[in-house]
Image: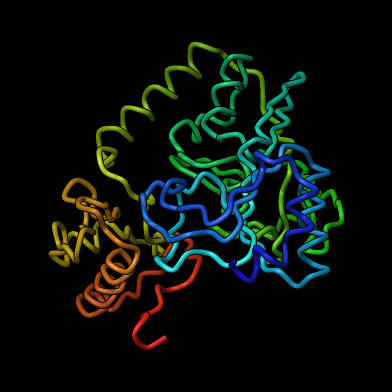
Length: 311
């Protein structure tokens, strides 16, 4: 039996049976359809169970990795050691007046649609972002001129030690694809977003326009982690990659999209190693051509696959 599974036997007994999976294939939970096994894949349904997991892990020095819906992440082929915590069942969304209170396992697309139903404007930019509310907070997600920093008011989190804490907007430390949640490894549980009353027809029209733009320009027909690279100041990563002659370049089953150069797609059973090798190749080529080192936006987690001969 795996070391971490053995060490977590007491925790496993405390949680609902269907909340814990052992040696779970992570490729089933990522948009790239890649990734090795997670020792323990835990999907709590309450804040108390989530706290129980974190407190146990902290007391017993067991690593915890948070996974949303796997839309902006590469999980390495060797999988994830310890506990992988997925909050997909904490997905309730409630609206009161102009405030949207969303649990972080809900999708940000779902939150934008709930806002539309209540004639609230301010989340239209999120109508095509394929991530969770928690992932949107973590990365200060944005698109088409809007970002989470524009609307988020407060967030209930759990610290690494398993303590509840409520943060206000002056504590989020938002930057381009960065936040306090990533810096301090907080587990966000729910957030309150303040929007404005608007015209439902205009809101829907804007969301429809953004959806069409996304479907037209992005390679949604293949598994991918979305936009791989951050936008360099005053430039566009996709344009630099395209002008470096990299579209269509393949390593293994991973390919620089022919439709949008900012995406790397899984066209033929790509491994995480294929994907990451292609990411590095793109970075090297763009740097060689333009003197710009592209920084990745996608998050990489897990371990490399060990060589059984040399292990």
